[in-house]
Length: 232
Image 1 (cartoon, rainbow, N blue to C red):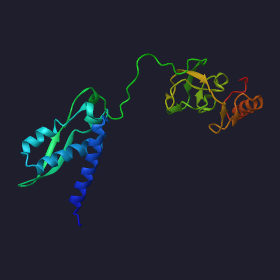
Image 2 (cartoon, one colour):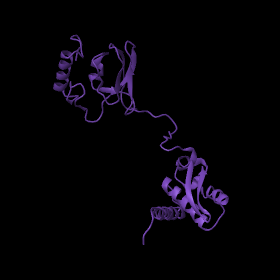
Image 3 (cartoon, one colour):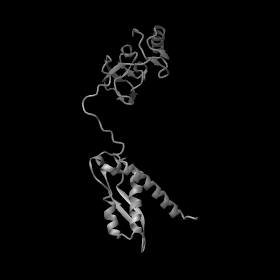
Image 4 (cartoon, one colour):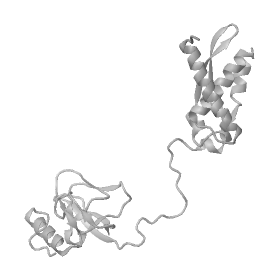
């Protein structure tokens, strides 16, 4: 049996639509490709049954509701276009917003739906508040997982108090320090095994090891992170 590309595509659509029908029959909400395949196959079947063009368009737009598909799918399918095998020849059908709206369609793809109430990021950790001044000539950004003791030397602040801490912000967030503008930030102790490697290259070890700490402070003074008068 030799099939044309169009006939092969029709078989793919049919198989995907059968998959969607099985899921719909079992009460499983349809995904984006399943919903599109289901709508397309039903429309093409109606065309083969000689259903009038206008009636096909009307019936397709009532086949699925928001309760039949996964959250976010209605807003993803704003237009479905298909070529129908009508008796008088192939006709293009365009159906706008084919899935009946409901509460589920209010959720956009990738949307983050926050929970209610206050979320404390570090409820059991003691915070340290320090004032930071950028003495450089350009903005400096510090990210959430940076050992604050080792940040850019152009930032002036109490580095002794900042040893073993990081910004009290959510993972992936950070703070921007503009030149000459004092900014107060909160720091929390680094948790876990408290091992810092790389970054400014001052620690490269376990933060609470006395030898590591002593070496870090000595190197910080040598490289201009700390003034000679700063204690450790």
